[in-house]
Structure formats: C-alpha cells, structure tokens
Image (cartoon, helix red, strand yellow):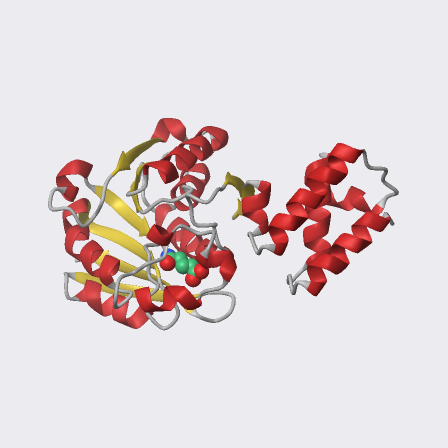
Length: 281
Ligand code: GLN
C-alpha cells in the first residue's frame, strides 16, 4: 500500500473525520481517475498528483465536506454536481423520493413542482424515474438554479423541466409560477435561526444559509408553503415535505389547517420522522 495513502488516512483520522479510509480512497480515485477499488493496488504518483491530493486533504481537514471538494455526490441512483451554492443532497431525502415515486407511479403524465430545488436532486431523480412526468424547479437562488440546470442536462431531463427563480414569500409568487401541479415536493429550510450557530462546520460553513434557515420557529417556510400550495395544486394533488428532527407532526397540522389530509409520515433510516405526505381535499 502506498505510503502517502496510509499517511493521509492517519491525518484524516486524527482530525476526527468519520470514514478516513473511505474518504482517502475517494480522493485518490478522483485524482487518479480510477475506481476507488483500484487504489488498493501499488500505485505510483506524479508530483502534480501528489500536490492535488494534498490540496484536497487540506480542504477536508478544514471540514469542507468531501462532496464539495470532489464537486459531485451520489443521490438515489444518480450523480449530482454540487458546490457551495446548493445544499448537499442527503440520504435522508431519498425517503421523500421513494414516497413520491409511490404516488407518481399511479398518475399518468404527472406535473411536479419542486419548491426550493437546490441541486435539483429531488425533482430530477423523479423525472428520471418517471419519464412521462414533467416539472418545474423553483429556487430563490439564481446560483443554485445554475447547478440544477447543469444536473438536468447531465441527467437528460432538461426537456421536461422548467426553472423559475422566485421567492415564495413574495405576494405574486403563485402568479410567477402560473401553473397547477399534481405533486409538490419540497425540502425547505427548517433549522430554527438560533440553532444555525451550533450546526456541524460541514453544514454551517459549506451549505448555503438560505437552504437551512427556517426562521425563528424553524417553521416559517412550511407556514408559507401551506398558504400557497392549495393554489398551486390540482384538486386531490399531493404534497411531500421533508421535516427536521421532531417537526413532522407540527408540519402536518400546519397543512391540515389549510385544507390538506395527512396521508402518512415516513421515518428515515435513523427512525426519525422525515417525510410528511399530505393530499389536498
Ligand atoms: N438536513 C439539513 C441538516 O440538518 C437541513 C436541510 C434543511 O433545512 N432543509 O443538515
């Protein structure tokens, strides 16, 4: 095994990086343009390669998330470009994708709206899985939309997807969208403002604040989405929302008071209530 590899594993381990061996392998594989499993063979490195590896390790030691160093991340079955303008796709959010797919399999030519699309990982995965569906991806951040657009090009779902740069707190938001949908999906910002300061460095310093900060209560975006969603959905339309820790039941109640029925709350792999599924009456 290459000495530099073992040193790198040790350096990351000493900095309390959780999976030092795996992460080192992914860094080496990225620089050497090979698959992570090939890193176990004897490898000889050129000095530009060593320099690149050391630069990536230095970024990781500052707790920059690995996906944002590598510039991409796996989500569901697909690979998404990421940068500091978008929230890194989380495995927890795959729960929402699975719940949405169950619904979408029973709707022909479904129209989907993603509120706060970020990298595009939710809606673009859905469009990839359901080729007859079409959709609209909305985000307040023009820079995030640029990444979502690149991802849509890479996944070849761009012909079924429109992008709108808009803020759901403005009065004319529904007019800006100007359409109705069968399914809304959203992973809105849900961290209470006061809790942002105590998040992990990986999240606090490298995910955009706009994608995290749910206002004083953490529920501000849900309250607003509950007001506008009935205007954006066809009768009997569905909404699937990601929930922060301990928020799911309150989110459900916010939507019930706006005319929705609660269908289910789905737990993530850590058994946390993660996805709220409701249907417009
Ligand atoms: N899941 C993110 C985190 O807690 C927060 C994402 C969000 O606010 N929607 O790290």
